[in-house]
Length: 123
Ligand SMILES: O=C(CO)COP(=O)(O)O
Image (cartoon, rainbow, N blue to C red; front, top):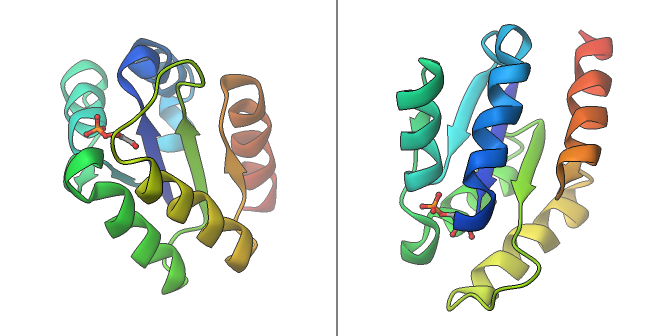
């Protein structure tokens, strides 16, 4: 299973904590990330990641393209709801294509826990 992991700057610590807590399960998946999120995950958890561009430089769109190609099974996108992002249109496109393709999408840690549990149950 290929899982996308993305976090805005204010949520990157939470993402690293989340991945660390689920390292066994996520380690069996192929992890696709945006640039800076992936660097943090790789450096701090030791898990291998397939890093795309940084979000503001097209990484969200690259992952959105993979979703359109049916190449991603689930997305954890820890969005910062309190900070405006210059690349908001890219973020909206990524969220939209998840809905278009009916791909599980978690935008906070509580739902990310359910997503990982649910996807693991299916395996
Ligand atoms: O901006 C992002 C998602 O919209 C995340 O990008 P980075 O992981 O490169 O910080």
